Image (cartoon, rainbow, N blue to C red; front, side):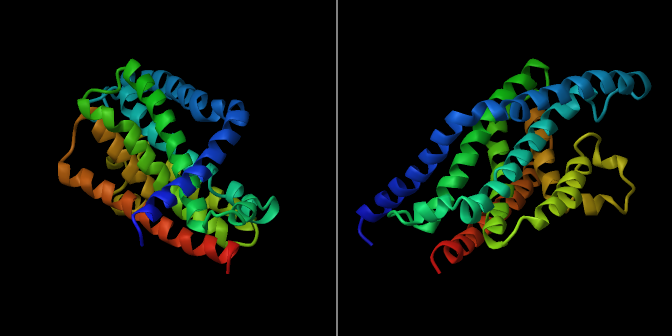
Length: 264
């Protein structure tokens, strides 16, 4: 491999990234509500409304007001939802129905260039949303440590941890029949039972290890630790390791499934 080839590889998947950026520039208005406004509404309704009841009857939650407690976790759920929403139907449509990826594969782009461009674009969106939402959290007083500056990066890692394996899966299946089941029996329970709205100590002892196996739990714990500057470094590295392993495994699987779908 010559020194030029890696640069050409970067140039190729950058073109894939640019395709998604141009497409989003024409359709961004349809995603503003789900990406930015809905989390703010959640924060206002739960943090202020439910938070008032929590403060009246229980006081602080792990040393924080309820508003401050849930604010970082909503960043985790928002970036999680971005990862899954960009990686099931959009990918299957691109490889089967509108066959955009087949058109891209007819150019000098390799399947892995298409994969890297797709995932890098989703991560770019996650970073942008993370910056905006981190500023909102800070305005509500939910960022209490300089580690809060890492919140957009953590959000991007959460997005990639879900987007990579789901992109690989969507490129592998022949229909979207399983997608609704995944939403109902995986995504919705994960959203509700990942210690997002209440601490893991609220669960019965026998359920806590199960909750800690849920991928989103690691994202929630990580953003909360960064926002408050709490928790041991070893624990946070363990959360990063879980999310990073999911991302890398998804990328490796995606290279296989996209090549099988577009070339083999």
